[in-house]
Image (cartoon, rainbow, N blue to C red):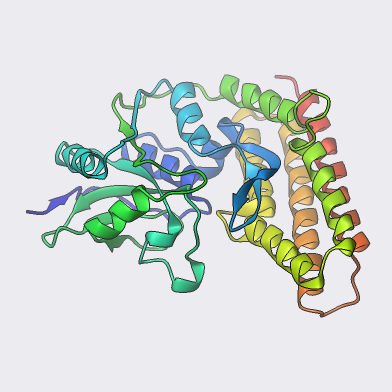
Length: 337
C-alpha cells in the first residue's frame, strides 16, 4: 500500500545537506532558504585531510562535516531533531518505514554510488550525500526528494538500503533524521551575528601549532603540496589535480560554490538586518568564490594540456584564495550588531 505525503513540495538546491534542511523546514511551515540554512550553521570552512582517503586521494572539504548544518540549524531554531543510526540494515529500513507511516519527512545520509537515479558517470564512493524520503508507492519504491535534482525521483528498497549502509570513509550507518518538534517563528538577527563570528573564527584554522590542515592555513598547506607535484610522476600529478577539482566543483557545490552560497546568505542577512556591513562582506565573499573558480580553471587547463601552466602557477593561484579568505575572515570578525 502506498504511503505518500501529498502536500510535499520539492525545491531543487545547490547542495544536498543545506537543501534538505531548507526543504524539510519549508514543508513544515518554516520558510528558510538554502543560503540562510548554510550561513546560520556557520558551515563555511576548509579542510585538507591527507590521512582520510576518498578514492585513494586526500579528503578535501570546503564546509563543516556532514550533519553540522542539520544539527546547528535545528538548535538555533529551537527544533527537536530525532536522529538515529543502525547496526542492522533491516532495522534501519523498518525504522524508515515506521517514520513514513507516521507522516514524517525523513532525511537520510547515503552513498552516491548506490543511488541508481544518478547518471552513471556521476556515481562514485562518496558517503555523505543527504536526501529526503517523503513516501512509498504501490510498488514499494521510495519517493525521494534529492535536492540536487530538478524533480523528485524513486529508488528501490534494495538500492536505498545499499546506499544507506555503504562502507568506507564517512560510512552513513543507516543515518536517518526527522523533525519531532515543529519549528516556530524566531528572530533570526541574533543568530545571524553569532554565525558570522563563529565562521570568522574558523576561517584561519585551528590555533594549535603543528596542525596546518584547516582554514586558510590548510589552503596554504595544499598549495605547498601542489608545488611539490613537480617531483611526482606526470600521471599522479594530473590525477591529484583532477581530484582537487572534483572535490571542489562536483561534490555538492564545492569550494567556489560554497563561497557564492555564503555570499547569498550575507545578501539575505543584510536585507533582514538592514546592515550595510553585511553587503560589503557579501561582495568580498563573491570575490573569494571567483578566485576559487580561477584556481580550478588553471588546474583543469593543466590536466588537459590546453595552456602552458606550471605547478608554481597553480600553487600561487591557490595561495591567492588563502589570502582572500583571510581578508574575508577579518571582515566578518569586524562586524558588530
